Image (cartoon, rainbow, N blue to C red; front, side, top):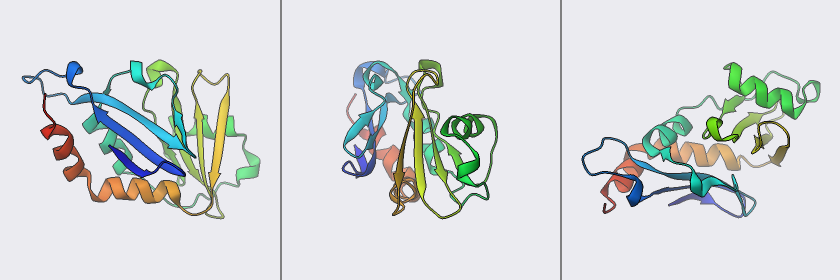
Length: 158
């Protein structure tokens, strides 16, 4: 299932039948992001994600402009802040912290959205900036349809 537009920003989420047992409460699968047609993290297919937790974490967010001046912080500092603190305008999207992938959404004081991520424990940090609320609109879609999305994923045949 793809939520959003992969040409700009989208969330890819899918249940993997082989990772689920009909008697288990968990809903295991994969989750990744499309950033301007590029799928990240690159190694997402080998990592199990509990999908209800993943979607729930993306749905309940604090999408407000930050009071922080973006120029005062490096992208590394913003990514580190996202893990440690709940600061207005910085939203952590830690899907695979155990597998070296960490991401965050940062909305600067001008309203621009910055998607910042590392796939290798901070050795390399990437950033893409969006001007038209592409990220927050997808997260809002998830928030508005959370129960329906979980039902759709749960009903898929095991």
